[in-house]
Amino acid sequence: MIPTTFEYRRATSVAEALTLLQEGGPEAKLLAGGHSLIPMMKQRLAEPGLLIDIGGLDELRGIQETDDGEIAIGAAMTHAEIAASDLLHTQAPIVAETAAAIGDAQVRNRGTIGGSLAHADPGADLPAVMVALDATIAILGPNGDRKVQADDFFQDILTVDLGEDEIVTGVCFQACRSAAYAKLEQRASKFALVGVAAALSLDGGSCSSARVAVTGASSHAQRLGGVEDALAGASLPDGAADAAAGAGDALDFVNEDLHGSESYRRAMTAVFARRAIEAAAGRG
Amino acid sequence: MSESVPITVNVNGRERSAMVEARLLLVHYLRENLNLTGTHVGCDTSQCGACTVLVDGRSTKSCTVFAVQADGSEIQTIEGLADGDELHPLQDGFWEEHGLQCGYCTPGMIMSAANLLQDNPAPSEEEIREGISGNLCRCTGYQHIVNAIQHAAERMAQS
Image (cartoon, rainbow over all chains, first blue to last red):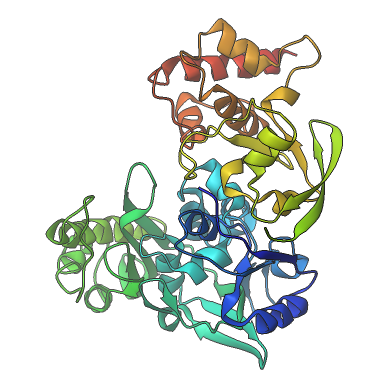
């Protein structure tokens, strides 16, 4: 399938990309790895008149510790690069492991974290991890930069807090070893039918506080507040099953398709919440 | 027709320049402009991996990349793998271990395996199966493909 025609511009800086976005208006789309956008263009579900290629911009690359001790990942880093990062394996293994579980090798070689977060596919893995880590999404627009917490960034299916004239430039989060992601994947695409990320603060064998988020089950990645409350003070790993038990039933809206009914996804949300919590606790 | 865009790419060691339509997919550039038809179009939906080539050394589904995105890149296709008449160990492995039946998936399978062995020269069977999980074969049941990649890994370790 051949996409409709468009104008292609390769931006040489983020500033130039911003200018091109403004000039292009609603017709303009950003292109990095293209592994969400190009399939949509080939199906003619997306027909942008202008593609602004930001994939090669050095400004959007890098994985490093910031001066205030956080870990920052540039938006154009590929899933393969994230999966191979020694820094992440040491400081936030959940991020490297989740990136390694996305799609297949070829998809991971092209797809980027910025693209995945901005596209916000309901079955994408990284949004849940970013919500669980309380990550900050860095955004640049014509009026300067702003930061949005991941929990506020994901709003609805394929809908995020990002203007048409804005660019996601990166994410940053606190280092966290006691965090893990567990997913029930659609075997062909590896998208999450249900994926749960748990980030725990552990005090010996008990959990002092937790952030737990789900993807795949609902319209967008979101926190499982009931599980988080139940985990406060719980002893782990024994208390994981009880804390996770109501996870699926508490969701307002749950997806349903040929890969899984609503009731199945609700049930699996509890199962994979328990597995994520147990795996995170095992790292404490 | 939209405006053409100039690109220069290095394909199998040879520099190529062309004016291409922005929407031209890399796989069509390779097959139709350069007549390198070893790279196949299978599903055309980034799932089957028949179109896999190496872009700057990384396995890439060329049906999901515009040729303009590859401007300035080094591209290796199945045609660039052998050294003259000497088959690459992966090609030899697929020959020796009967790693194909119809052969349609084979070029993509081999290019994925090339990236895998570059990252991990001695993969376990499980790692091989994960490494080629972006490539579908509807004939073999994969066992002989796994054997072929193991064969190549052993030969590459010896040389």
